[in-house]
Image (cartoon, rainbow, N blue to C red; front, top):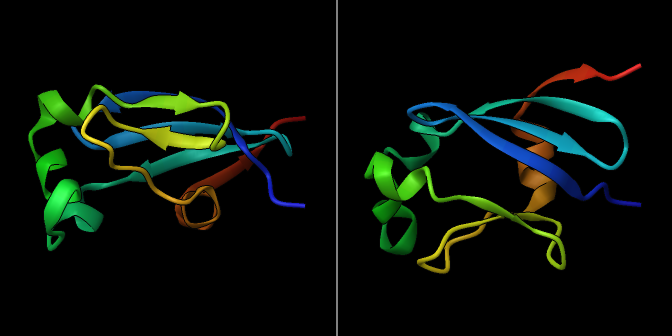
Length: 85
């Protein structure tokens, strides 16, 4: 079963601390991800827009007001993991 996101907090510019229902947590640096993106993801290069992220409980991932979201499986595999005991 795929873990869903329970918490997301912007640490600085494009780094976000994430927590998942499986107990895993870690940090994803979005800067390299956003570097070459187009469309709604390109809008997230503006740090004031990026900072508006929130967890969508229904989708189980982070979303932004402009409609951008990123699959929780992708985020889970990108984060530098530390397991919560």
